[in-house]
Every structure is written in structure tokens, then in C-alpha cells.
Length: 119
Image (cartoon, rainbow, N blue to C red; front, side, top):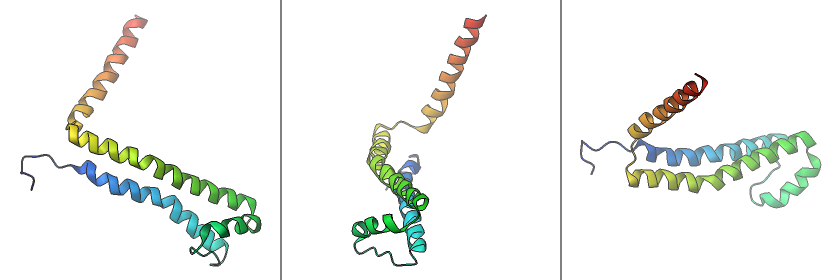
């Protein structure tokens, strides 16, 4: 059990949220495909039916579904890296306070250097 003085790790809650967000394009594409095929699309053997629907669906709809599938696969590809970065940040105890101060200070430092170069 965490002590009352330890900061809450709300970043850990973003890991399942990121996974859920990765499923959104898949659910969108599946729903759109079910509507376009009037519920003849079966999820029992989806890969075998995709080639059949590629020839029967309009080309722009098929391209739209392919982009949704690509977005789903890309987000699932990046998800382990995101989860590992969140866990590593929590293990190293890099707080949000350091980032919230460090990034604006760096931006101000660079802006000051640009202004000094112009003078």
C-alpha cells in the first residue's frame, strides 16, 4: 500500500488507455465493413473474407478500411514502446515537475539566445 505522501502514478493509467485507443481504428473499420456488407462479414475467418470484399466493395471504401487497419496496426506496433517508456519513467522516478519546469526553461533559453544573436 502506498503511503499518503507518495505521489500518485497517474501515468500508469495511460497504458490501458493507450491500448484502448489502439483498438479504436479496428472497431471503426470492422463496424464500417459490417455496415457496407450488410452483416455478411464474419469474424470467424476474417482474413479469407477480406480478399473477397476487396473485389466487391467500392475502391474508395476499401482504401478507407485499409487506412483504418493500418492505423490500428501502427498503434499496436508502438504500444509496447510507449508502455516501456512509461514504466521506465516511473521506475527512474522522473517526476512531471522536472519536465514541466525543464522544457519551458529550455525554450526560454533558446529564445533568449536567438534574441541575443539578432542584437
